[in-house]
Length: 180
Image 1 (cartoon, helix red, strand yellow):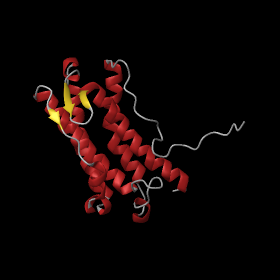
Image 2 (cartoon, one colour):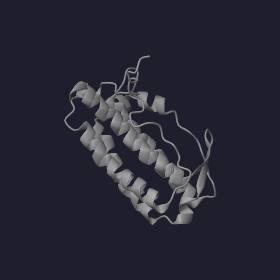
Image 3 (cartoon, one colour):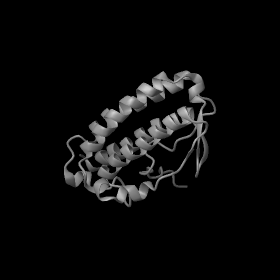
Image 4 (cartoon, helix red, strand yellow):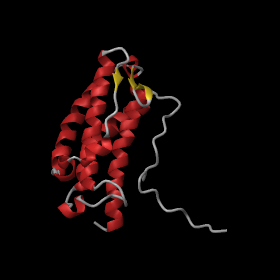
């Protein structure tokens, strides 16, 4: 019987997100800290990369490092707006966006990554201010996603804390594999 380990999953280097059965204030606080840390972590992950390296897919068939950086900004802007909607409306309905098509737009394929890192820095400063001001009741509020159903803000916070770490790990794992 072969005892060799399976190849690492390049798509999910930190594993898939799993919603915990319960979310308490300590876990929320850790997730908020992770959201706050993302822009600096992304900046470190892309620091010093050449255009050629930025245009390298993080895995065969995957997005380039540049597209991953721009996707983070796109995705987290959408989430920030969803939080705002859920905090100001009773269970608003939100629609998905075609993230794979957004990643193929010209600006997502060619814009300097610093544009999205700077955007994420400002966005996450605002988002973290909002998150730290939210009450326990606020975190139980929800929105209705037309594809995934009802999403509570506490679980959504965990998802986006993971999401940032997930994509930064894709970039740092590529750097490690390539010796960059």
